[in-house]
Image (cartoon, rainbow, N blue to C red; front, side):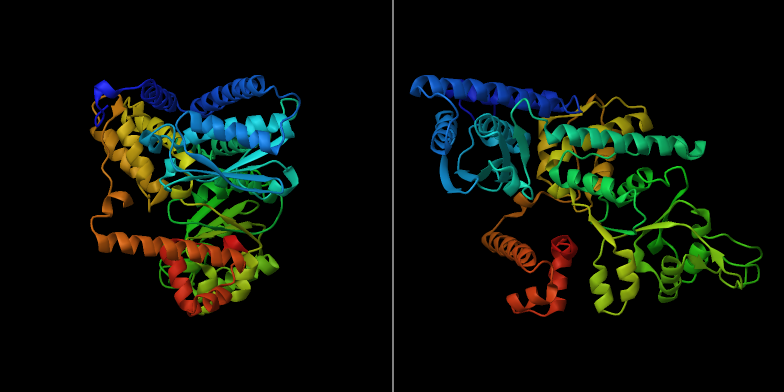
Length: 516
């Protein structure tokens, strides 16, 4: 209530506050309560709004484009928005908005944008048979305005992000996604529980995939897991690359065999070959007995090579032979060993850049990069944040015998505003610190290693630099999209060297592979 004159409280402000608090209360329940409640309310209300419109203007039958546009714009503007029509193309209606009906508090609950999506999408689906609502920009995500596209033709909307809506007699893809998520989680739990007790005593891995970006990853996992193809996973540090590798293993026919994970960057270069391929007795000073490497231990299963870019040239050569021929020798050995191991590798760097710099074998890169998955950073997964917070709190309560059930609105707002350069790992660390010092059942403070970006704009020079940086980043992404990830063409378009473009891609955490 701070910042508002009590005497000026209106019915609209009362309802805004009520809805925001209701959303926060549902959010603390975890699971899908918040999303399901929003969608249920929005669809029911949308049906009522549509019927009210029909009664007033005596409309019968299905609404056409013009009537639909008139309805959704009038609806939003009557409740305090500032919506207007931006464009109408074949199968796509785009509207923009400069004022949110829910007020400034919407930045704490971007899920409320789903209410707009469900109202727009539900009405469109009833009249056109199908709709996909793509929220390109939103005030809730501090974009400065909203841009919403309603796609009414399924064929042209296939590659578009967003939530889909159909008439009630048609199945919805989100139900299929929920079923897929459940299948993957069940397979992962079964594999985890089959491990030795010292490993299975830890919590089973869980994937949070409420965001469209992560749901796309799960769909890719289902397709590639049953195959024998090698997989290269790209993503920033802490996004959960090993978790996705475990999902691929669990969903494959190797799920009952070992899953062996190794961080190549954590092993000294002088020992990496021995660690991977093993060594014979007397192979070097200190080799007093035969040692089986990770490849032999992963026989029949999956070997996950994290930070694969850290492999030495000699290890790269040996790895290439294993992938091509399915055979290897231990260090110091004379006998060829046949191995049956599926390789899933990962890196938070650009292997293409390493190839161009002569640091990584090009032929090995092609062998590892048969299928590539890109795991989005946490900053691009806002829908996952509340669910991740609840999952992490649950695990921390078990670890420290605490009873912290939720975070308050201020803490959740802080979590949403933060850029999370360390991704999920940093979120876990921040919440762990908070839980340790929390005395009640609600987390009311959270210390972060840096302030949110919005708090850094203290003077004109900083503000100007931030604007230029955002513009450069946006242009770079657009150029990568236009040239399908071809760095040389992007460099020509920007008047830079390929090396300079690679530097900017690294700076902004942009993976060129996702545009190919």
